[in-house]
Length: 297
Image (cartoon, rainbow, N blue to C red):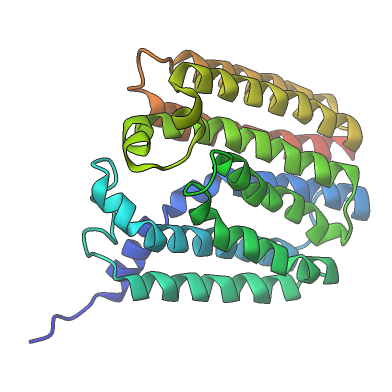
């Protein structure tokens, strides 16, 4: 006897599978790039509804595809790790074929969205797909997996800019670097939770390679460099003073994040990873929106 499947519940399960709420990390930086580009290219902060829609779909498609693949390809590893054993694929709530299907649909959304934007977005698609597909394998090969994640997610910020302008300007490159070093720092902090498991199972990470105290220092310096790059973005974009107030607030958030996590107490890693970085991303977006609006006032 077959059991009826509630479509809405299934959608909810898929959203939980890919941690869709974590889209809040990269999407604000993509929007920030979009608004800065719109101000530079069009003279107005708003690039138009359809541009915003296609950028949003492209970013959501890219992240969903990458996360779905990651969950399926890492299912055997997740099943052995007490922290991740209850994830959807290891416990059988989502079948591997469903995960691959979700990744394929999301990838189609990304491709269609890029085609609706401009030729440069289309030309960069193959490179983006390579980074998305290969990310789950990097921790099996190198402790530079955090940097690979940063490059992959950083493409969202640069992508938001080039989706409007159709070209790489200094601001696009700087935004990409901002997200690279932001992701390295936050992912290293998150990876401290799996230090013992990674060491026992031959998986690579900065904590596994260098130990937790040194890794937290690496994360701190990575975020310090990110903050300096945020200033460089403002200089390159000719930003209003409001932007720099936002950067100062972001510096405070980063300081708080590194205050609540230390080698002797990792109990607040999730707070540092999700809560602090969510506020940081939203502060970045709010700062850019306010400054591009006021710059034209």
